[in-house]
Length: 124
Length: 107
Image (cartoon, rainbow over all chains, first blue to last red; front, side, top):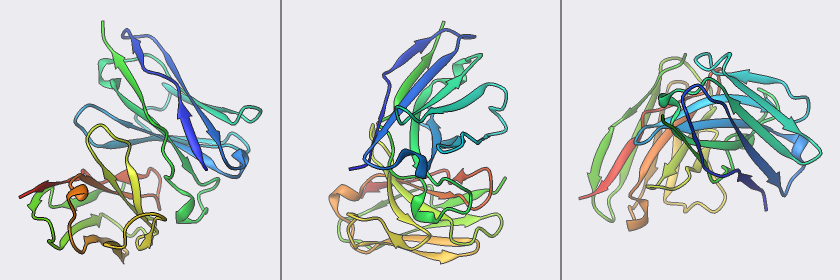
């Protein structure tokens, strides 16, 4: 079955960087893309960006542009999300989610399944 | 960005009730609308995609409808396990945007 397994919880100081991994299995990695979504404590869901697993094309949320980088490793079917210059506001659970490979991908290709989430705590 | 406005933001209902949650988009989004259920401390789960297609494995008491700018999620007969927070999401136009959530509580 399709499965996304994320790396473990992280604690970082303000100004540091974090890199979260998401390893996929159960399907052809390069047929889809990945979306990253985060959820601050007690808050709603926020889309962070998307990466095409085939060619590495990305699209980032405007409020994170310049601080976030999404990459992929086709040899290990893993995607990565790096967030730099961390602030306390970045404290959240970060989810990787399978998405379409292209903006025209059908609705069923998007936002399912989800990884188990990675808790990032940013604190001095 | 497209604004997704969910209503109500919270509600209480009883087991067996029929419940409807509405999501309005600030502009047309075709049928790129999904609904998610999230229980406390758990991962969001997709219930509906393409505005009205039921996710495999999701009970048939859940249904979605709408197009353009107004969409609804209906639970035909609430079960104890349905008490959760529900989110809509539009992914027709970048950036994808979520509704603020509807917390469904037991009356």
